[in-house]
Length: 210
Image 1 (spheres, rainbow, N blue to C red):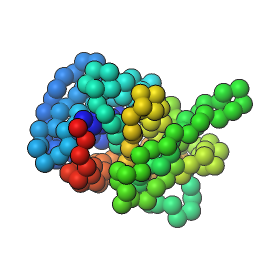
Image 2: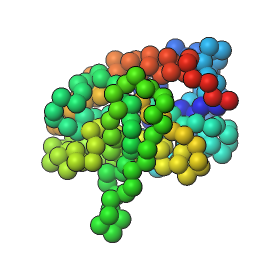
Image 3: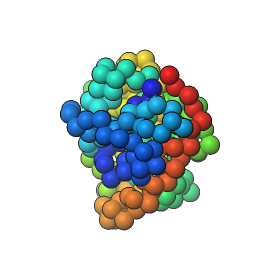
């Protein structure tokens, strides 16, 4: 069974509607179960924002529901200023890393994501931080670590790695991680989340996980 981690209900809503997902419970997380027989069986959890919340939600899926694969889906900011994607573009995350960790001067190790899912999407490296990246100086520092930034992905990937199960990620660009980022996220959230939902439904329709 696939476990899907979304940070917010608003990001998840387009997918939940398309998948005819039914509420499963609200404790310790808001959870939904897919009711559409066309899709790979899956549970969706709304984790809340940030690495700790995402790691707890991923762990809950593994230990309580015995899921055998984790998927993290949601919005991201674009760190690079070249032609690596525009607002609305979707990416398959190839590797994820915590960008705001310093282990005695050493950066956190990256975690590789499953390349078999979302294989039709362009790959990108994800940098995860506990606060959104809306500062151009910090964005420039993180751009050496990856092309995209979010607040949950690396935590989900680390949880999957810890429990020895695969993890796939799909991210949609909502902003360019600059001074207008907050307004851009609010303006583009529903549209980009809808695009993510379309791609996730297609992927669940063609992949089989017991």
